[in-house]
Length: 306
Image 1 (tube, helix red, strand yellow):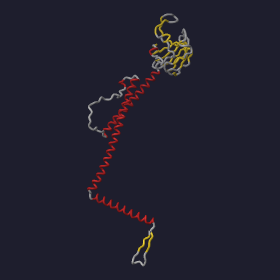
Image 2 (tube, helix red, strand yellow):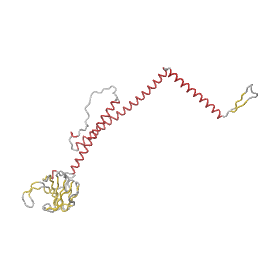
Image 3 (tube, helix red, strand yellow):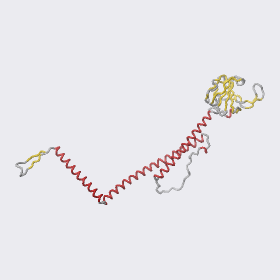
Image 4 (tube, one colour):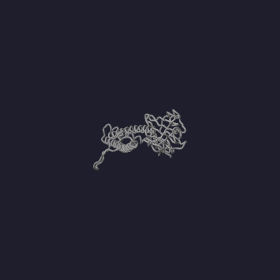
């Protein structure tokens, strides 16, 4: 772009050439000057309005604050409603857990009063009111959360005690002679009075006899410690296992003993094999249960194999 200046003071006209970049720079300077002027005027106007308590400015600020307050209240209300909904879901889940706890405690054979799981909802009712529901406040929600936390802690404690009691019951069951010592489980002679096969006189039989071929495995009726493993003149190859609480099981007439005194055996572990040793008329296992040294009826303990 060429610019020619003509003046009566100049002897001749002067010519200037402006390039594209120079023109763009001048335009930017002009735009910057306009923007700076607008910002300065806006700042001065605000300072004047603040200094003179302009009603228009006060109304504008109040409206802006009101909008921000409404947004915050709406966000808080939405958050409270979401939390209240989650709280309701947690309460429903807790109710289900309490129902499970109540059923498990009953199945485990414990008394209902031992575990007062709150599985039954409080009876409630009434006519349906169509007015707008009252939403939970922050304090109400905090109270509900605190109550739910107490219920969760209480349920956790109850489940912990239930687990301990079930574990203890399981251990006790493992120490009770309830497993059949011979797989077939067929009695050839019951506990009580009978005709002695050797003397022909009435005699008391202190155990039960299980039929079995020689070599049939003999298994521990419960877990315990072997306290006797010997050849007895009456019982032949005899084993005794102490299950604690003064409860002992005796196994007689074995052809072989596979454990020794001091061995710890588990329920169902092989401890010997059926035989015909001692005072016996044929291959079988003589099995006794003794409590504080007194013979008990094994049928009260033994359970048929499933």
